[in-house]
Amino acid sequence: MPRPYRMLSLRMARVDSLLSILAQQGANELRLGTDREPRMFSYGAARRLSIPSTPEATLRELLGELLDADRERALAAHGRVDVAYEAAGVGRFHARLTARPEGGVDVVFLKEASRRAPAAPPPPPHVLAPAPPSAGVHAPETPPSTALPSLDVAPAAAPTGALAQLVAAAFAMRASDLHLSEGAPPVARVDGALRHLAEPPMDLAGTLALGPEREQRLAHGRAIDLGLDVPGAGRARVHVFHTHEGLAASVRLLPAVAPSLASLHLPVPLEDMVELPHGLVLVCGATGSGKSTTLAALAQEALRRRSIVLTTLEDPIEHGLLPSESSLVRRREIGRDVPDFASGLRDALREDPDVILVGEMRDRETIGLALTAAETGHLVLSSLHSRSAASAVERIVDAYPPERQAQVRVQLADSLRAVVVQRLLPRARGTGRLPCLEVLRVTHAIGALVREGRTAQIPSAIQSGRREGMIALERSLADRVHAGELRLEDARAAANEPASLTLYLGRAEG
Image 1: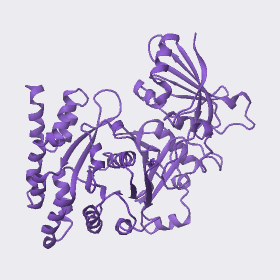
Image 2: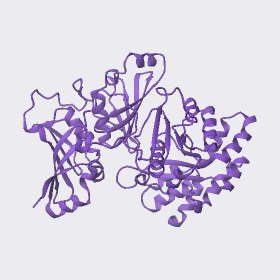
Image 3: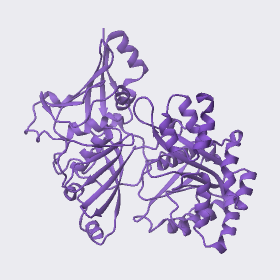
Image 4: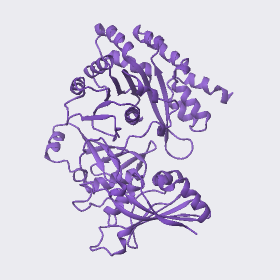
């Protein structure tokens, strides 16, 4: 006998992004299955949903807690499980999970309000069709039984219905980025690879609906950064700019809530860094390497472990943070709440913070103020574009004129506590990407190297600093290769020192 039909109340799952598309398109039924394309129906009539087939790992990620260990055992025993599911901001669904005899799972979501025929004909069958004016513009009220925890996050811009549907579809594909261009179909980046969506050329200006003030800024050659909340999906950071071919936008997709450090599956633990009473912790890497996600996870861990005032300076505000009962969060967005990072840091020093998160150290003034804050009793978390810990140190020093560099080295040696350098690389098996790290911990010996300008010796010090919690990037890459998680060719392409990687791999290759 199948398990009884019962109510399931979960925090927002990725499947909610698909269910929000269903609601916006006037449909009432969603069908998912292992290695099958998601299908959407409006009272029996098939509707177009331009999303590829979902491998088992993708389907599990979409369903989240809906397919937990208890329900998997019930499926194995009974072949079917029925639950009532509330999708945040969308409504209530009857979800039926069915085990296939040959393996795999099929899932059908049926909207409970679907028992009545629609009052008006549904819109044309197109996932990007403009929604009614109210759809996607204001987040619907979340049903009480699925109310999400109160997030400390500044209000974001309201997306148009068309943009909300497009971003929700990208979330459902597990995309990290979405690239939009006037007169061209949208392109998503999934697991690092670009995938052209089977959609017609875009009216990007109409999709974004920026308004006169922002359009005037664009007309003067300035780019625009926006933070968006997409109901049922998450948050998005949108960078809008002009190219020689017309208007374009790059959209970074973000989870609604900052992930935990444990969920990032980092090769070495970083939790102790948030316990530091003061100092500077840097997270480095190229664009798209997950720096912002790791910074947000560190900030969330600090809020969980400590009683602190956390001040963040972000451009724009990204991940939501969950303050504990004993913590307080002050979030400021560059260009809206404060003109620039340097001004925000000056203000922060008068606001009694314990931890300061600076989205990025972009210029000399911001670097100097961050070092001052770290020296004066604050823990400062920030990011920097750098391929290695040694080059991060040199980049900070090189931001100053030669006559100031010796002084900056002394200041940096005293205030720097750790440097984390990230790479995100495709998994050898399945979908998704995994992080590989270089971690520098500033011990007395490392501090002396920084102070004396002997940064070329930092990589050797990292290699011998395993007991202090350090790891060389090449060691991290080799460990992933040995575990079968990473392809050798991807590890070689990511290494800073191929010879060191070869030495670490020698045991397996010998």
